Length: 172
Ligand SMILES: C[S@@+](CC[C@H](N)C(=O)[O-])C[C@H]1O[C@@H](n2cnc3c(N)ncnc32)[C@H](O)[C@@H]1O
Image (tube, rainbow, N blue to C red; front, side):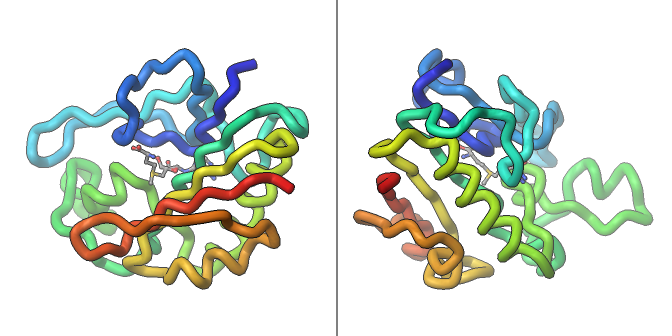
């Protein structure tokens, strides 16, 4: 088994090498599309799977990367509609942010994230590290950290508005 799991890899945008052999890439979707600005975009995981219920045994990985969707589905904060919206005029337009990053259900996001944390820590080895990334545009990071009883070690804010948090945990 590879030593690192990315539980929801999306377009692997923060990777130096999108085919890094040390990382097992998982996502719930497989996508190949063109964004409305003409750039190609793909989600091409090794495993199509759900971070709320993963197929891996307990204590498997040295590191788990967890960068779940941070936008709520119906906030309407999308900057412009992409091809999904324009292909089906009756559908609510899907913004480019949702195409790239996915979205959380508005009502039960607490439950989804809590299960995600629990699953990530289950498949992590004792003493292994969880790298969690969160953008607090819709939901403050303080709310999200309440969804796990594991204690973060350190974190760092980044982004234009300093609202993207990178947080490191170790499995006790
Ligand atoms: C913020 S994006 C990840 C971006 C990625 N870190 C990158 O570098 O491009 C979040 C991803 O989580 C995926 N996702 C949403 N719900 C999921 C679930 N239940 N299980 C697995 N992946 C999920 C979405 O499809 C989306 O690609």
